[in-house]
Image 1 (tube, rainbow, N blue to C red):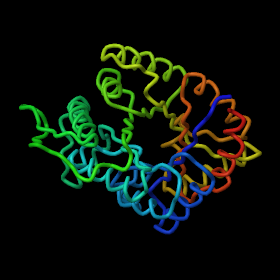
Image 2: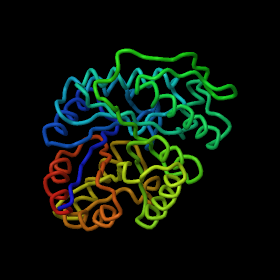
Image 3: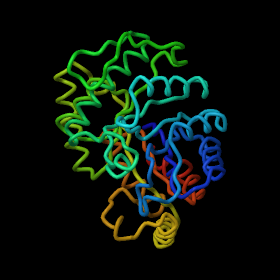
Length: 314
């Protein structure tokens, strides 16, 4: 029997504070392995100026409202904060949650929120991914109770950086999001405990081959990395009703259908249809499946993903 670990990401846009707390409680009560949110300062679907909450603050609030589910950002924007601060944030969350924190991190991509807040966006993806590699290497060492002093010429200027207390977990996991073949997957191979990706089965098959080559190059067993798949599910007995619910959610999030029509990570259908779509990914090694859920949070999908789809795939 294949064990599937399900997770939910609650979109942090277009929801009020109490709605997000209620959603987190429901995810935890249903027995999900993971609970995530974004790390964005502007909304990323539809109108960027609609309400959205800051990620680390939300995770710490969720830590007090939940008991069992793991907590993390999917994924943190490396550009937003000094890596030493991020390691401290993750450790604080680990203590607040009793050892349930995951440090999610990525290179960052949304230029308008950087420009508006005066945050350095770098010269392009390549530079930001170089920053990410340096950042994750430092955070891994700090979380493991080592001291970090930066090498000359890098992005950061750490000078005997060390932290106390240590995380509750002996090895607080780091998740890296992204599938860039030259840099991101190389950083995944070097440092990640978890990798998050999304896309077609053909794309994921190719990305795993690239990741395996990077793992071989650094002497790491790819089996040590937990593969996590990102999807966006809406589940009903009637596929047409699932599509109607999804369209209503996009309208609530001020998102024109033209903006999401080509997004192949929105999966609407029956439990059987969605299980059939998931099985090839599970066969590839994606045993953790995280569904991003827009507000207003669809409790029926929450219940049927963990209660029906997961057992069908398992």
